[in-house]
Length: 339
Image (cartoon, rainbow, N blue to C red; front, side, top):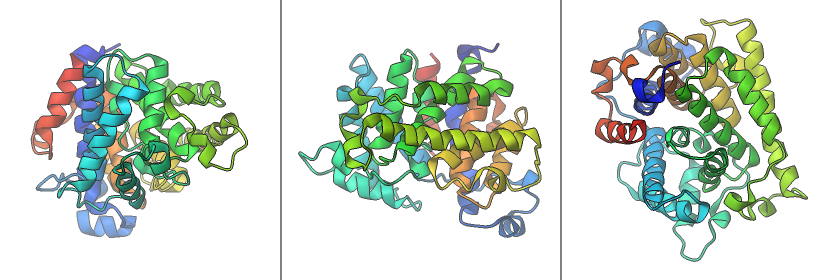
């Protein structure tokens, strides 16, 4: 088993996420024939020049900065995490670099997060389970020293700051857990089974310490009913993923098997599918994810995070990794967590 320290899983995951994001940026909103016409054979897709990322990587970095501030102050707790992450999300929303077709849910929630005296639960978009919740959650699979409760609660909290739907919370928790397992050396062949077991174990557990009374904004009679809805939708997506892996079809658009990825549970499943189809060929996994009819940049950034967590930083070609936008900050954060 390769250790996190020797393979530099955090650096690998962050660089992989950004590379997938940049590869999928030009192909988002295109169908597969249009992508092939524009980019040529999908297995030969090249990293664009310049290698510009989207809001997926920008928000990942915003979350990472907020987590770094919170953990520098001591034990990660909800009350210490909310404010620095909220401020980073507000700063991202205000930034002139926030011009990469960000999602409306994130924009609306960040505007509300800026209102003084408004509880963050009131800013959360309770009806949205968009993939913006879990496209950015990888840092919580990489920060060392967290308990299972801290990692799960924080993953759900960061999602809930913008996307309050229970499926957004559960998918973010599962995504962070997948990154963590791969960084620790879990064999990919057993990954989906472990994620399914994790979902079943947590199916009715509402993290009240981290989420407060968020559930009361929904129509659910109890917090347990609220969160169970989210885990059940994630379990359905994991079942679709398992079916796709039983009869893999690498040349077929992965979105046809596990969904287009605009919503959180589909982004997780389709990102995992692209990674698991090409476990030992990470660039092929990124290219497959970028050549999809759905939310290509988010699918590819998740595939890149999984591949980088599994294989480490050295797997990415130097001429790709050195060109990626925000490369300095990605490497600095990765080195911090790998140490």
